[in-house]
Image (cartoon, rainbow, N blue to C red; front, side, top):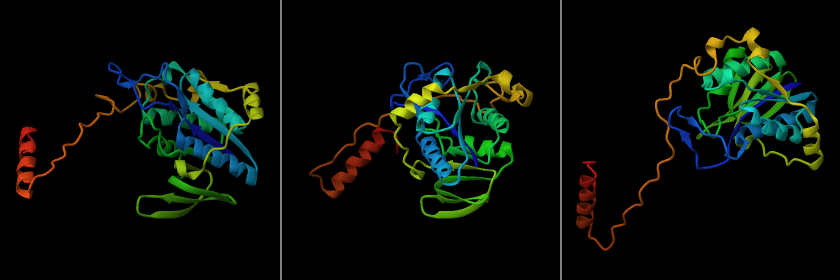
Length: 262
């Protein structure tokens, strides 16, 4: 089975900084990691390969420093890695990103594509389903359990109050929850091997035969971000002690009036 896992390098920090001019994350100088959901998907792909054979390829779209994330994936056991990096790709929203990745996946070839449910720096959960739509393959999102059965994949997808068991034929795309699997540790030998392997880098020129420049990058992104901002800390609550019920109600009403809530 030919499995391709899409990963994203994301900031490893709660102190996210934003560029006020472009409304995008400032990534320079910020430690980065493989997105948690993506790493669970990669572990699942490696386990499937161990069970039924095949290959595991890893794809990441990002700046040149995303090479580090791909080498971590190689150290975990992936067979090959692809970095999609070009100035033309910069500023892509989820639609443009999915367009670029889908083009690369067609070139690589696949039976099963696994992506994370969503990235911790964007939280849109859109890229995986959009890739499936562009590839014209079935997709199952929110996978908590996954196993291969012949030319089909059995998936348990988890929601807040219910779960679904689905059977889907390959080729298909699955988006993984972080609960799908706990990623293995990298061995010393795996790390050494990872840096002896080459990462294939594809830019716009490598994909241009099947990639319309009108649908990628900032120009090809239908989403307009008008404002981005960090998490706003809430003011501490007020505790009303030693008051009767009537006094407490009066005090609460006064606070609401002062804040122009009522």
